[in-house]
Image (cartoon, rainbow, N blue to C red; front, side, top):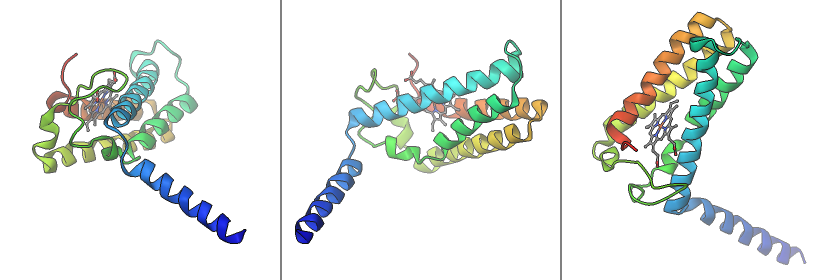
Length: 155
Ligand code: HEC
C-alpha cells in the first residue's frame, strides 16, 4: 500500500513537471496575451486616476493595480516566449515579431528595464504620492512602448 502511494506520488510529480516543461505554442501565446491584456487593464485604471483624473484618486486601488503589474513583470515572462512562438494563435494570431530573438542581449535589456520600472511603480504607489505615481506611470508606459516598437507587430 505504502509502495503504491509512493508510485502514485512519483507519477503525479513527473506528470506535473512535464506539463510545465513544455507548454504548447498556443498556451505560451495565450498566457502572454492574457498577461499583457491584464497589465493594460491595470495601467488604464492607474491612468484614469492619476493622469486623466476622470476617476477619483483612490490610493488603495492604485496600489492594488500597480502591485498586479509588478507581480506579472516579476513572474518570469520569458517562459512565455519560446523561439518557435513567432507564428501561431493563442486567443488570436500572435503579434510577436521574429526580431525579438535576433539580439537577446538587447531584448534582455528592454525586458529588464520594464521590470525595474514596474517595480518602481509599485513602490511609488505604496507611497501614495500622486505626483510621484504619475511620473513613474509615464516611465513605466515608456518601458512598455520600448518593447512594443521593435517587437510587436501592428494590428
Ligand atoms: C518584453 C516586451 C514587452 C513589454 C515589456 C511589454 N509588452 Fe505588451 N506586448 C508585447 C508583445 C510581443 C505583444 C504581442 C503578444 C502576442 O500577441 O503574442 C504584446 C501585446 C500587448 C497587448 C495586446 C494584448 C492582446 O492580446 O491583445 C497589450 C494591451 C500590451 N501588450 C500592453 C502592455 C503594457 C501595458 C505593458 C507595460 C506595462 C507591456 N505591454 C509591456 C511585448 C511587450
